[in-house]
Every structure is written in C-alpha cells, then in structure tokens.
Image 1 (cartoon, rainbow, N blue to C red):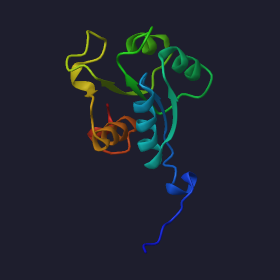
Image 2: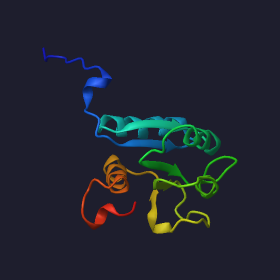
Image 3: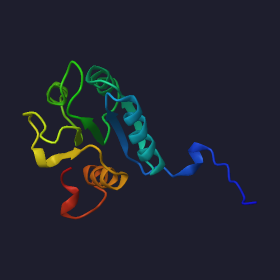
Length: 138
C-alpha cells in the first residue's frame, strides 16, 4: 500500500512575498484561482464583487497585483480601477471572446477558460518576478 502524506496547507509551499487580490463573481472559479495561487506561494485575498474589492483595497496596504474579472455585477473593472488612487498591476480576465469596450486593451485580457500555466505566467509578469522586459506589464 502506498504511503499517504498529510500536509497542512501552511506547510505546502513557502510564501514568495507577493500579495494578490482576486476579484471574480463566480464563487467556484474565484476559489479555484485563489487555491492555485496559494499553492504556488502567493498570499491571496478574494472578493466576489467590485464593491467588496474596493473596500478591501481602501482598508489595507495595496496588493502587488489584482487578478480582475472585467465583467462584474453593479460596478465594472474599469470603474473599480478608476476609483483607486493608485492601481496595482492588473491581470485581467473575461469569459467574453470579444470583451465589451473598456479602458483595457483586448490583448491584455486572459480569456476564460484558461489553464493554470497561463494564469501563473500572467501573475508572475504582473508581480515582476520573471525578470527582463517581460516583467514590465501584465
């Protein structure tokens, strides 16, 4: 019989020093994204809507990046970013193949469904820990 290892969540990975906020209105997707990021060393907080995210951002030090769905109930991603004094790096995502007109260039949007590798690559670039020119923008 194979050995079964039990590892507490805090022992699974070392913290890489980056803090993220995931803003996604689909609860299951939000939790899945957060779990992948936590397992790879990020400290992650989540919000299911822009209003909650805005309150979190105003009440704490800014995260290194926000993983942000473009389409949110009651307040758009553009409105959320405009409401911030200074927006951190953004990793944008959308379930729409042709995202509605927004303040963000379409090429910068991660289209759902996406894989963990795509997500981690975009987050790494946004946080600036890929090095070189790729680190400049999400």
